[in-house]
Image (tube, rainbow, N blue to C red; front, side, top):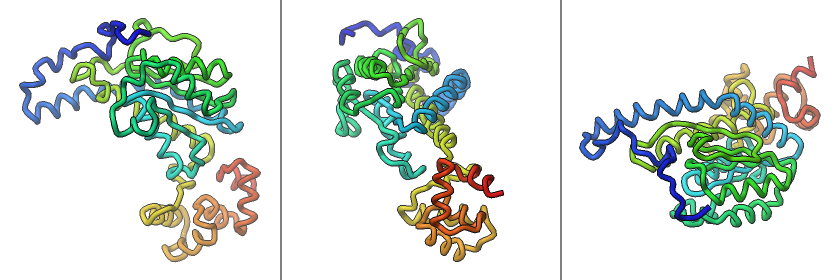
Length: 304
């Protein structure tokens, strides 16, 4: 796609009639307008719920058979993907390679604008090749305006390698049709308050979608018990406190007893709960969890 291709027809580039006097609003009026417009993100997520659920199922299948989940994008879209991927290891104790974010321009683009790099589809294809993406992987391409050549190049390359592909954009299909992806998600939030600034509603709804996808996948993979992050990585005082509170809330233990149990489990909350409820030692607990793919509820049910 040419760098000078006309994009004025895109929903994400249009002027919002509700904010035509943006530069004349008071600070309170600005906040109220943002609040009013941001309500559209909820409707957009609701409109895409079936496809988001399909992504969760497909991604969980991919990861359970040894695959990986990739987000790829440029600018704000790329940064959001990297952010979501980076938060999976501490939240769910996943290895860093399981969920990865790829941004045009690499790590430097996270803190400094490098949007010019989004115009090279061959760079997107190279990013896919560099990570040796294969048929067990799932790749999510994120582009608010739907036209980013870097993302299209990546998705085409991923599809050629047999990976499951997902397209996320904030423009309707009739404006930017996309072919040869497995799941096509459109998060339609309308024109931005600041025309063309897709870090606003488009960025917000993208963050919401990625939150839903990654958390949903981890639920499907047994990383959650009830609504507790029982695979949390206990790497600092805040997370140690959270781990102890999870143990206290779910058991009859006081804080010191919870701390002792947590240390016996090598600071693994899920294992600690299994040891307490299943009356097993750490080694046996690890073996049982491995037999049930790390799913605590299924492991406990097997002991009944």
